[in-house]
Length: 112
Image 1: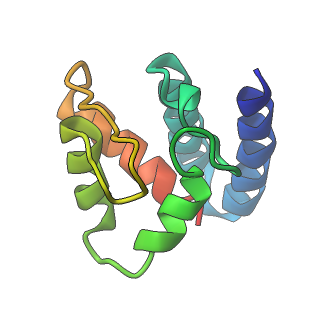
Image 2: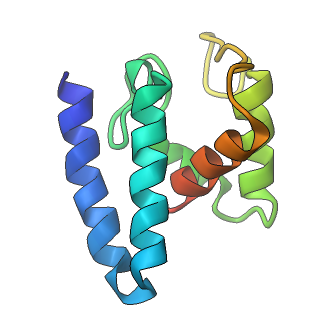
């Protein structure tokens, strides 16, 4: 439950930062957070602090310099990952469509 309140707090900051970018940025940010909550991403991740997985803010910061960051993360979300952030693997999220994974990856990259 705490991770959802942290996510909501962080999301308010993202929305405030995106206010100059127009309503489409607001809509995409809201969709990304909603999808992360619906797909149980927030069971292992928080926006601002590590839980079982890394904080999503830290993920965005780590890959901020990569031109292909969103594409890279999209594949990690769908295929899963092991050893990048420690011993706990992230399972594959095969229930997601490629478009949903892309939305999540793009949203995560806004958190840097």
